[in-house]
Length: 136
Image (cartoon, one colour):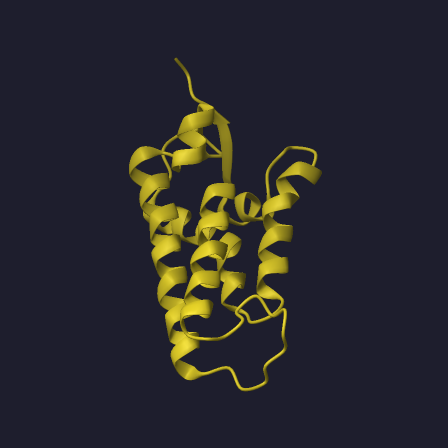
């Protein structure tokens, strides 16, 4: 979750700098170019695809694998499907497509797993998933 979020932020920042914009909204620019918006969506789609593919076939992203964690269905602790993984990724990373405030919204969704009592973030609650320790 955090790895994908950080990769998305870095890619969006790099894309903005290459196109001469400021995608994280530090300098308000009312005339955001159409090309910049398209590039942001393409990069966001790549990061969402990374999150979805890893969660479905490998059961977690690189960061989760390094920590010995995996994403499973909350009901039966089984493997999650493509639609579930896509919903989880869109809730977590989708707000990054919103100029100026999207990064803050996405960060709040990511950090919600540290606040909620069952340690499930808003993206986990929306998709019906839970992150568990990988069994040896």
